Length: 455
Ligand code: EPU
Image 1 (cartoon, rainbow, N blue to C red):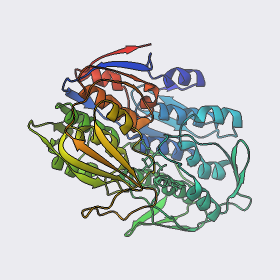
Image 2 (image 1 turned 180 degrees about the vertical axis):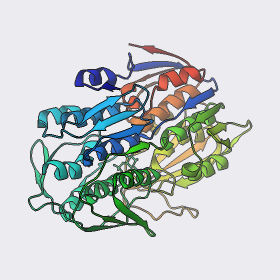
Image 3 (image 1 turned 90 degrees about the vertical axis):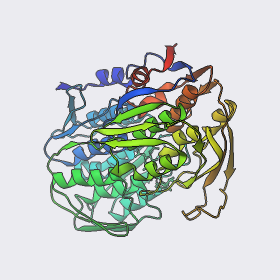
């Protein structure tokens, strides 16, 4: 194992992306195999959980993505020794946890949302947490009120300063009764990471139950936590005095799997996504099948392909698990531009997640975004105040264009659109895609894409 120093991290943050711009000659079906490893939205939280233990943790299948490097850097700043074998196994030793300089944390946190999840573990370990202003994708306001309200319920005192947020727990953290206004993924993780070492029992109602959260609960159980997932989104956490390190293989990245599946469909290609599992993708697979995509579930992954003929228009709403994930709509919408008829996608999780459609329209798509959403006879998810609907009229041929990547999932959709379009596209700001997609340019090479990285 090689210890990760701040210098090696800075180099790794570039993730081998020598260039931030890609020229794509589109219109060629993608064919081949890609590997999908541990989920970004689990691995980063599992790494934070290591901070709660008295002994080292070992995490397998960690992808080489920028968000992992951000968390590694932050853990390092707090004295956690992080080492890797360079093949995806990380060892995290929290023996020497110490305070970090705020400026260092602020510089390391970058665009990531993960720093907020350090609150509970830092309060337990150090009695204080300083959290910088948070980044993340530009897909909506992304407030942190649920997190702060939950931490206050545990007994934390929250002070806002010009540089960020300072939390203390003068009387320690005690189990709490918390009901989330919405089943937020991050706020549920916040409660889990705080409740496991709080004195007494915590009851969390209206919790998120995404598979990544259940995997995090499995990790915490390995560490010694007592967490019960009850029906109707209720989670009980019985606080314990101490936790040990864990050894765990991270669940696969469902968002990456759905992205490559959509790329196969949009480009009329055939991609075997090695490492993808059916159980955590059933909602996606249902919609994929209704659009006309073909898939074959195998022991070691799922093959996705365009079976020929026309794709069909569909209507669906994004929702919390077990609904259709908000992160899946952007790549699939590219395929829907190639489907026959009028598709409708209702985005109910974030208020600004259709911005990426502007670039698709510039490439020839016919997508109308309706702020406030629309009512249709077939929709099932109740209306939310900030929702939007996208109406996609297809099929429309796409032609190459110049695109600046706006956010992680929208950016990957732009890559798919460029691969689908006839002619040449120039896609810049690729670094954002590297936050969540491991070695994606190597994978494009393996799939036979025609592209060139330029300065
Ligand atoms: N919300 C609040 N207040 C809060 C927290 C959330 O109003 O304090 C709202 C959000 O604004 C949003 C909704 O609740 O409208 C759901 O947000 P949630 O907290 O569930 O999202 P998150 O934890 O910030 C994670 C993933 C996202 C993924 C969502 C939904 C990570 C690091 N991020 O975000 O992933 O879209 O859950 O599943 O786990 C991505 O990977 O590209 C990505 C954006």
